[in-house]
Length: 389
Image (cartoon, rainbow, N blue to C red; front, side, top):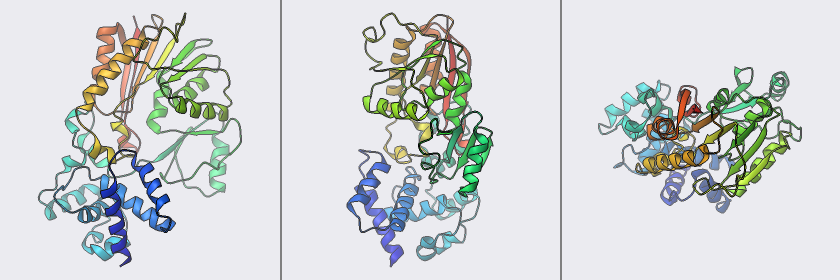
């Protein structure tokens, strides 16, 4: 009866969800309204719902309850009490490698199509392994931290002291299960010895290469993750950060304060409009354009987007990125770099925009890279260092 009830609750959440807000926020609101649910019930419901959306658009003619059980089978790798009661045949195969689970499901459901796990695979950038990328959406990406220079030993010691499990990716990057809580570590210490930041996002920093006293602009700064890395590479830079959202710039202020950074300027700017009123007599030695995008490289964290996304949006984002690139590049000195970044897996947002910047805006590509995060339980991103002629 308990497991039937868990399945029923998860199904009711899915039927109530309208994609008008992120799934994480919707679940938080739902649990707030249903305070009778204990922490274990909330955790189970969230796990079931997230697993369901990891199916993408697979098996649309099956009931929500049946798809929930199939999703649990694909997304779990160890014994499931719920499956043991409601679909024990799945539990008997639960530890199979993922590709063998897919083959097993194909025998049970002739209509099961692996392509439906990520139905936009024809749009992805060249070099992406289609099968690995699709299957990666069945698992939640890991949590990563970037450790400040010289702080590795104290972070490692604190984690071991608190018996928090982690993997050491490098001397400056550790990974954790996504549900790991780290907010309490080094609370109040300025600067905090680490930042929570995805592995691929950390890797974009190798493209910055600032030098002393240069003037840089992080024009879509959001909460400031790229700016923090830029500043740590060269603390003498003169830094301007901007975003269209004042609220997220307030979040940036908090992160900068926690990092001990006080010397910077910020502006609330819509990059699709005339920039002259905001940038009088300004020229920059480097611009970071972490462009607004589909976010398709991060849908392992927000799997509801696989169902909600409309493919015509790809071209819309590509046009937006080209417009913003054309606007901001005017303020870059000749011979200096524009760092173009997306968290997208789509070619139209990556290589196509890069080619536009080179061919139409007068840049040369020094180097670019598709950061295949799906190989490391991280986000997939694109980064290019483009030099203005």
